[in-house]
Amino acid sequence: MSLDKRDFKITECELSDIREFVQDHHYSGDVGGVTPKFCFRVDWRGLLAGAAIFGPPGMEASIEKYSENGTLELLELRRFVLIDDCPRNSESHVLGKIFQNLKKKGIQRILSYSDPAHGHFGIIYRGTGFRLIGRTAECCSIWHRNRWYSTRIINRYKDWRDKSKGFSRVALEVRELLKSGKATVREEPGKFIYLRDLVRAGTAFTAEERVA
Image (cartoon, rainbow, N blue to C red; front, top):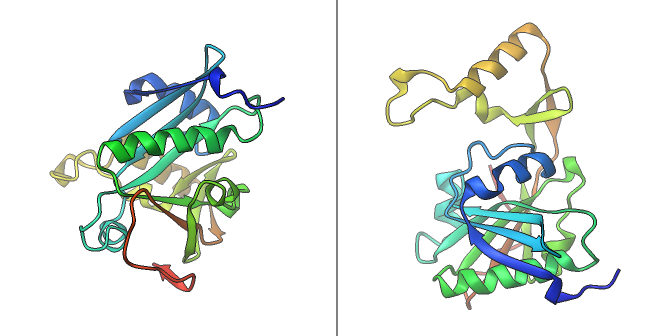
């Protein structure tokens, strides 16, 4: 099936408009822990066929490093998914249109990670102007019934501003799964780190750079 750009409609939306779609189609199965700043829905031939969520990186160290100490407006591509029925090169077309939109909003750099543990190596990113700058360190994840969770989730509070309110519901559930032995911890390879500059940028990161 050939790509016809006229078949696609890409519009900014609210997280609630795409939450269920992302949960059903993205390998993570979840949008928990994501602080969305811009969300986009992708309609193909009149049907919801994709979604993208952009927000600040989850770690302060990543924000500081990849925004070059706050001198660049940085967002991370936290979730991106298109259904398999979309024609070849659809991902590149969709991301290109979204980046044009974000550039107009003042965003200067996009950070994204590809997780080889789930079969993602960043081929789409390389085809859309991202540059590979390294890999994260190896880490561990929590698995339960073919679903995975970041180990950070077990320390997630209901409200980071008031930890006296206790852990979040998901944190308590995962803690109980680990305690009962129903969930297991697995070692995972490091993720590939990609950057895409929407404007001309200064610092050139090397492929040897790593983040903890």
